[in-house]
Length: 69
Image (cartoon, rainbow, N blue to C red):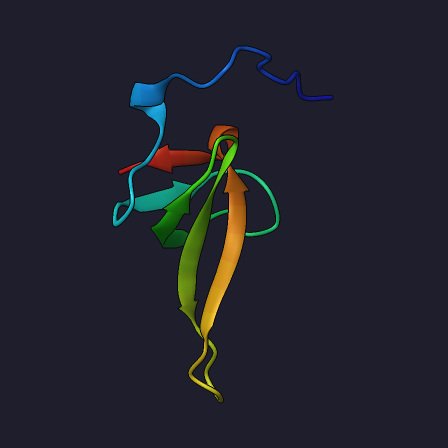
């Protein structure tokens, strides 16, 4: 089983609004997304648009589960 990092995420390690990130863990692993909102423990990211409706696809990613570009 993978061991979790229990140290808090530093402010300088957090992504900022408008930045592109690589998702490295979770259901959306391997996707890239643009940060829309930064929260205390996570970010809300736009990972694309729905092909038939054109609506944005958004997801929430914990700070530990992405890498800044």
